[in-house]
Image 1 (cartoon, rainbow, N blue to C red):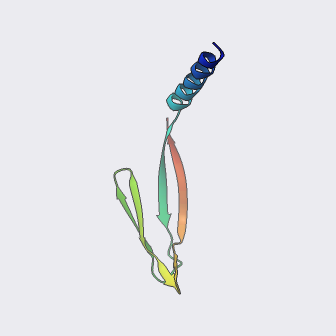
Image 2: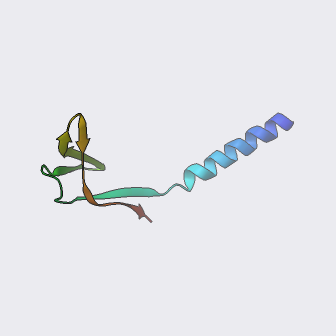
Amino acid sequence: MKINSRIFTTVLFSTIVFISQERSFAQVIPDQTLPKDSVIIEQGNVILIEGGTTTGGNLFHSLKTFRFLLEV
């Protein structure tokens, strides 16, 4: 009986967590501080950040704004 109670509690908790999840969206706005700017490409719910400045073996992106928006 104790095992069934644990399974029930786990399933109930998982269901509540799954149902209570909210959607979020990112908003990305590049700035103009690097020699080669980043390019923001929005494809539906996917945001691609391409371009940027390469120095040595490192790739840099500079963003003016990067924030998440919750959908209510």
